[in-house]
Amino acid sequence: MNKLSFKITLFYFFGILMIFILSSAIIYNILEHQQVESELESLQERGNSHRDVLSTNFDKQTVEHVVLMEEKAMTDVIILDKNNQVVDSSNDAERFLNSDWIQKKDGIVQGNWREGNFLVTVSPIEDGGQIIMLEPTKYIQHLMGELKQQVVFSLFLLVLFLLVSVYFLSYIIIKPLLSMKEATVKLSQGEVLKIREAERSDEVGDLARAITKLSVDLRHIQNTRKQFLTSITHELRTPITYIKGYAGLLKKDESRFGDIIYEESERLQELIEDLFELARLEEPHFQIDPQITEMNDFLKQISERIIFKFEEKQVKLILQINKTPIYKEIDQARFDQVLLNLLDNALKYTHVNKRVFLKLDENFIEVMDEGGGVDEQSLPYLFDRFYRVDSSRNRETGGTGLGLAITKEIVEAHKGTIVAVNVENGLKVVIDLRGIPG
Image (cartoon, rainbow, N blue to C red; front, side, top):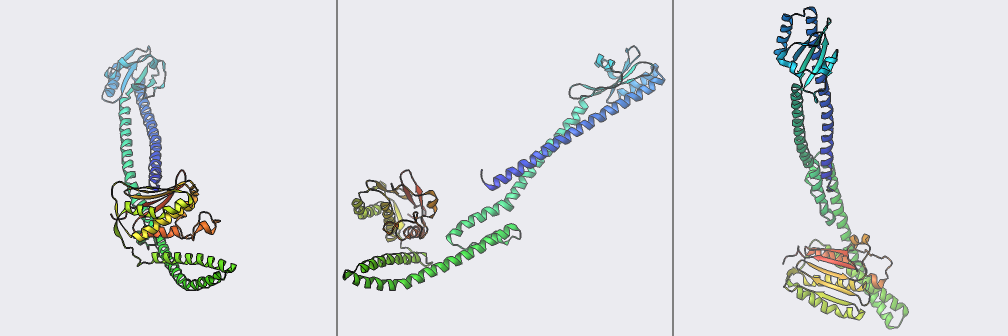
């Protein structure tokens, strides 16, 4: 319901439909009024013509001539003498005579074609008497009925036209936009986009070409960043090794400064190792070594290896595995790194006497803690490199800011996905295994 194509369709369809209905109603009323006025005017003129003839010769022969003329027409005539007695009428029209008509001396007696059976006019004869003209309203009703049918048929054609127009509108405008939307999803993955709408010469083509250029520029920036990351990591590894070595010598001499230098060099070495690991994962030729693995046993082994850390902090680790075997093709060393990193993070931010859950089902692995969760605005950036939910965290708990970025790269290398969501008591990280062969 919130799609742009649906909104444009509704606006376009109902807007034109309402304009057509209103204009049709106005035109119908105008034509109806003009038709009735024309019929009444013609009826009055016909009565006046008969009156003029009878005013000159009001004899039996002339009366019969007038009646004979009306018997072959769509109208009827009733001729009254000066005592308002019927002299003659066409097609026995006198049986429809209404006393209200006689009281009217001249002009239109009944002009409402919807309420009465006849349109009626009166033309007075000079020496007394009246010519009453009648026209059955069924002819006007038939004409108005045909006009309504034409309006309904026109409405059907308009609806058909609108449906066809909406289809072409969607095909020409909305469909290319949806195609570009699907292509831009790959933009965040660093792919160079090839959008077929870029060959068009209109505004949609301009947009497609701009997105394509953006993808090329973004790919160039990413490659440059990766090259810089790899180069700087290689350059820093050797000097930091020397610094750590000499700091170790100072530490042996029980130098306070030696302890500080050694501690900081250790942290710097950890950061460089993480950068180097991330650079390796992002290299185009990086490959994992997948092996068929029974996931229940795999998670059980990991929980047994890390359980002592949880016991040391008095946090309970709860393993929930599946009763039936689940097999996936994973690089065991890399996936081991993923799960240990997630469990280590959960442990860091879970308080004493709280729980951490490691759960496996057929398609997902979940790591959930009771650490209070994170701010909703931070969730989309948890797996970005160097991102920290709380920038004020100290070095004891903050880490290098690269652990979750490395985790994400490893999971995606397996064709899986990883997301984080807040739950009632903490944070839940979910690894989707559906893309990983089993």
